[in-house]
Amino acid sequence: MSNNKLTKSEEDYIKTIFNLSEFGNKQVSTNSISKVLKIEPASVTDMVKKLSLKKLIYHKKYKGSQISKSGIKVALQIIRKHRLWEVFLHEKLNFKWDKIHNIAEELEHVSSNKLIDKLDDYLKYPKIDPHGDPIPNKLGVIESTIKISLSDLKIFESGIVSRIIKEDDHFFKLLKKLNIQIGTKIKVIEKLEFDNSLEIIIDNKKLLISKKIASNIKITKI
Amino acid sequence: MSNNKLTKSEEDYIKTIFNLSEFGNKQVSTNSISKVLKIEPASVTDMVKKLSLKKLIYHKKYKGSQISKSGIKVALQIIRKHRLWEVFLHEKLNFKWDKIHNIAEELEHVSSNKLIDKLDDYLKYPKIDPHGDPIPNKLGVIESTIKISLSDLKIFESGIVSRIIKEDDHFFKLLKKLNIQIGTKIKVIEKLEFDNSLEIIIDNKKLLISKKIASNIKITKI
DNA sequence: TATTAATTTTAGGCAAACCTAAAAATATAA
DNA sequence: TTATATTTTTAGGTTTGCCTAAAATTAATA
Ligand SMILES: [Mn+2]
Ligand SMILES: [Mn+2]
Ligand SMILES: [Mn+2]
Ligand SMILES: [Mn+2]
Image 1 (cartoon, chains in turn yellow, red, green, brown):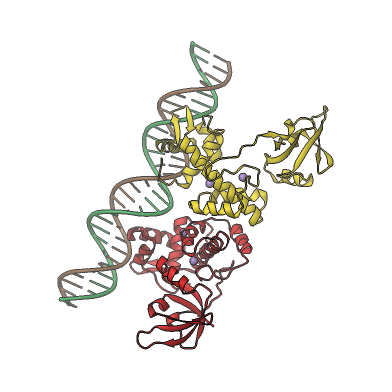
Image 2: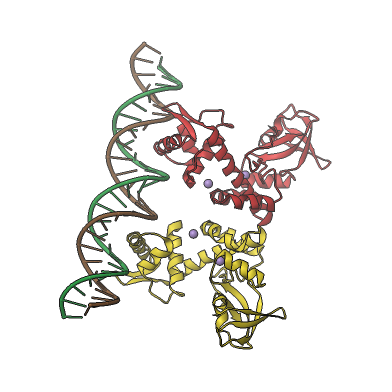
């Protein structure tokens, strides 16, 4: 369809619109894009018109933007690049979890497709990035797994930690102390009525975590 | 000195001016920059003025541009990034020799210094890139080795191949057939008067190469 | 429902990085 | 040394991606 290479800005917009749209289903407001990208609404309107001309989104005045089929395709490729670079930064260069996003935000715009395929190969085709987010394959296909909040897990159910919501140093340190990280297996054995704290098991050890902590951890049921 | 981050364009200009200046000594003409970057001379004049305001070069109207101390500093860091990425592309991702330059041309502009230092560490502090060009260290210091053309080597002198001048597929294939690549040790045993062909030894095997071939190979004397 | 508030768009502008055409300066050749 | 050619700069213009201020539209509230 669209043959012209996109600019860094256009790519960031498309990625943002895709992320806000919940897999292309929802209309995305000008204001919400503005907030994520920290660009004034008036400028967002400009860009949204341009992307609309390129058929990457549909935009109805005053009504919002909806990402198109080809827009989704583009977005998934950028997300693929972003997450593969994150894996590289984390696993090969030993960057900490919370330092990789901004660098990947730049690397994702390096244009060579050959590069990203070779990187994928080099990293042995990882399925998730260091934050637990799934990595689309070359064709843009995401192996879908349903994630729910740890706090929504029922008694005696188990899951694998796959996403940390709150990205902040204090919280990361707390999780480290509790031995919780992406990939950790957790089983819920009790929910306290008193304050909704959860009693869980990690590595055969019982521990108690507050509802607030639990609600900031997403898991994949097993 | 200058604290503002440079744009991709500014970085490419600085790098080009440095490369054309023979380590900062020569004045660089507007036209020569124009030719390397494939940007019209009028545009080069614009940029040269801007870089001059930022004290990265000195520019005298109609006389040419000379890179400044701080300009050299900047240039060496970009070159460091470029060459380290080339090593990564070649050694880790198995890109062929002649495919890495254009990709590195983009990667060199990713801004994180932490990233490049970690990459350097990951690659075990390489001293030369896949083309045989030296890689400046974190401080911008280049370990200098004198390179001469293979055709200038005298009889019974030896050297290590450290640079291929002509970058073209035919020539690369020819070199491969001759078992010549960066790092190959070569000894000259005869220079034919007839056409200046060289008789050389590689891996204890004698072979004959034309002057034209020899003059496209740079070596470090040993 | 009428006002007020919030959202979105239009209008006009600006900086970066390029362009073409023409003028000015310098270099080369007759 | 004058005429011609080459190089470089100036002048004016375009596109991209942003901005502010004000107008238009839609949503919320009294
Ligand atoms: Mn980005
Ligand atoms: Mn991520
Ligand atoms: Mn470059
Ligand atoms: Mn190189």
